[in-house]
Image (cartoon, rainbow, N blue to C red):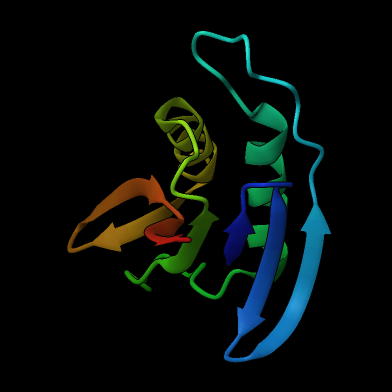
Length: 111
């Protein structure tokens, strides 16, 4: 999953092939002390349920998410996007236990 934070563009890729691309309206959070993006979190969950590759509880791998952001993006917005990205959860079997974990592993790509 690739996320462009300028416009909240969510792009699913397999290799170089674009599987899906959707845009989520970015609400004005410029005056918010702590921005929140609940609609983005919902869209991450919907998209993961449709395109995610690691859903089986026996599969301990995570889907990879790459956050594409300008290096001038305020830190509070990065944190709000990370909160939305880590909102979708799934169960994974670890030995004899079942744990609930985020569905994505996060990486940054700055420009």
